[in-house]
Figure 1: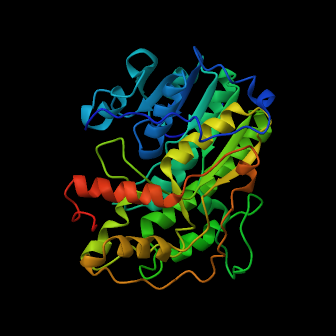
Figure 2 (figure 1 turned 120 degrees about the vertical axis):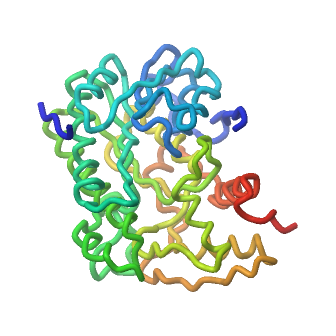
Length: 365
């Protein structure tokens, strides 16, 4: 066995109306969540917090891994969730600690592996954002295989299927495509076209997902990967999410260069809902893109400019001509009956939260 690495109370949205099933019989195996125990790694993060909220809302018992369970600033929002007092337990478990992870996943029916390292001030991105991401997947999946976990939902990224050298702008990337990790490594040092942290984060996602499929093949573990686009939406946690925060520089006359680290938008609440759908659908398998659309970053930035006309935010030209636009890139997910909300809902919700925090001026009427 490989052991690597050494606010206010939130009203959680019910998923009714958000999901439809192609056949109700497909989900009979998983439909009754009451009393069923699952694990969510990195439970206090942006996406993971919404996942925990929706799992609790549907009756699951959730074991969440965090680095410091006693940290109220990091975890306090989780205890305000409906059902948390009875069906949520937080465990101290780093993804680099196999034994700690093994102890948490033992007895769990399913595992949602969401945790992934992001180290903005790292002096060694390869070690801290790539090697650690891969080691975390190895530790988590090996522990799941040993514990007899029925299914693992792995959080990957839409970027793991998107960009390669000489990319054909007419080609709409799908789940059969893989991005070129070496391309991201080479481009990651160019501040004009890349956000360095984003580039190395993408390399980590590519390599970690590839390793996950190797482990699944070798052990027979039932693994499904979800490849979400850039997530926007309301934060449950105190910290502003890295994806939401990319919009803030616009109010200071600049923007974060994400030319090759952006493929489109999706609402964070939809990503959480999609993960649960994939877990609950016995016939689901393989990779699933989770994006409301493929669109350049300029679309989001220009929407912000339209919402705040008095702030004189400049319109931004499309700097991603190689990105093929697509209104419905998540065909595999939609074939399971999933319905996306407009991504603008998440973007507007994030901006409204910025207003409440005093980070930007009030929305123009």
